[in-house]
Image (cartoon, rainbow, N blue to C red; front, side, top):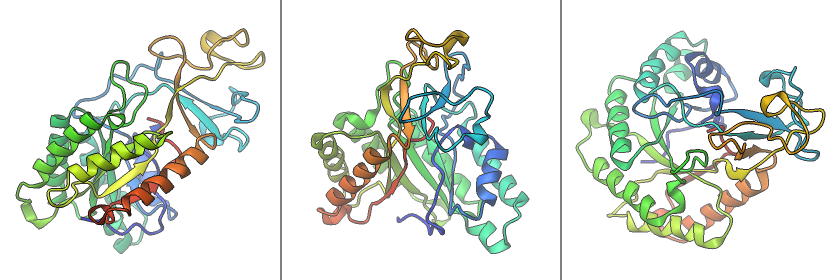
Length: 309
């Protein structure tokens, strides 16, 4: 099924500022967003550790860090790039599903808009766990008026020992196979939720072809994916603290990482304006390659400069 109407055509990415009920309320009540995306969640809470799951903003030209006395909500435009070593939300999917009726009930939006603004629940896990996520969201849709969608995050670069599945044709195909099986089951109440995948940044043609071939192979007869979010953060990036910056351990200069990570090297995912050209190129390439195949032309594609996940 296609995505529900999103008007205006602007959606927040799945990121740390879409974690709490207050965060979602802010995005939902904003007249400039046409839908709300939650931070990527699991069936169980992610073990967030602030000592190793961190983020920073930096100037993409000078690579200087955001001054430590400026809050995240007041970041100057010059610091338009970011680096993070974050994982997933410490709040499980079930809690996000419980938040949605409360957010809509408390909203100041006009009643018609309040009842029709979609929520995109970003989830991840093993293929079997994602199938359970879909079942939970589909079940919740029977009692929630607002359209629900599911975004499968297959692209986080910050989980040690678990590279982004969307880079692997075999792993991506397994997610699509399990998803197609789940979608083939009877829908209670006659409503199904739109499903999308969030892709990592692709940098050469074979990666795009791997994605498209996996989607084509999953068409039996229709594609189980309704939309693609491109892209997540670019992994293996490092920002160092300058002499006047505050990095790991409160120091600066001499090659000290700007933030910490599970490995202690401070290497994480880059997003923001520094990723903009690559993200835009990914959307253009994916859209063009989808349109080459009749069975994939109905798959939507929307643009993200990299979430905070």
